Length: 495
Image (cartoon, rainbow, N blue to C red):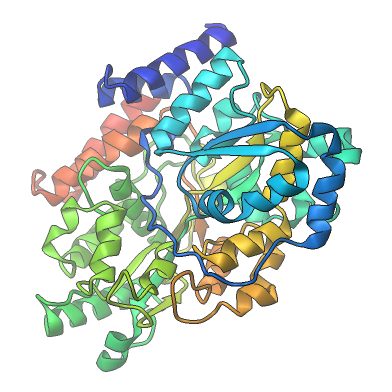
């Protein structure tokens, strides 16, 4: 199939799925053949809406002076971006773009959509080459198929020195994120834009009452969760999860326990490895931990998991750090000021190296799900789009996104230590008091899923459907379930 034909077919199947003309399973099988990753089904988080702080923080005068000067030839231009509802996009759209528009004389139209609709518009724009959108929001699982349809920012810096923002450098982004999110083979697919990642979050008041501190090991995490459930259940449970059968969230939970027990999804030969000794040990642990969770957990995605903590039903979770600022919002939750953040418990066994896994899988208990921002090669306005992209991902803009609300993990190292971020380490909506944990997790605990075309079907269907059947009691043992997953996975990967 020609590359142009593949792009058109990819756009068609995404459009058919979003419009309800194609079944979920058929879509996944077509998506695998066309290189779409695990995020194709809108697997991104349903993030709590941030409460933006009303304070005097404004963009840097120096940055806006640069925008004003470099944008002079492009005044009157309209730029367009379709994006998922992420903290950076929400903050820029509702709080910050007005400053850019006033300085640049441009208009920036940002469509905030469910992830599958973002993919729908992106694939159509790539296939048609119409240039409807000047900038692309790229889920990490889309890096492979978009890599040749966006500008590598290193090339833009080299080719357009007169448009380079002072102090803006690819090297300032956290290296683990550049490699884990924005890189595909020899190219950068934009720069890291957003980084949801697993951290440990727990009720300090309950832990204090029980005489506990943040768990250091996975076994200690289980023992604490069991003790809380035994002592305080059914009003309060020790742990919680995102374990809905057939949903990508269930696969996310599984990877953390699998990696944390020294296992991996694939071995170095590209065969499924979740049914080896480490994988079965992880399943035994997870089965025990599941019994410390609320009864409804097998029907929850990340949203239900977060609400179980927010409404005072569960005392801890190892999950997405972006929930932490929401937990601190007294107008939305029952746990404002009661939560603490810590690094995930240490793996029980040594992590496997990338060389010991398959398809670029990076084991780590801090499961990540980030995204990049890029300038489209189809854009009719690539130069003004490059100006906006630099400003939107600049040091000062990241500080404002983080300090004004949302509490997202910045993708630039130095932002974490900015006085404006440190000043926001207080209890309240949009807090930043968890961000040192996020930074440490990115540097030391981050885990990334394998990169292969079939991963869309495996992560959204094959694996979580069978894991759901296991927790529903439809297998005689964890080994039977994992052997079934291995057989199905290897068959799909081998074609």
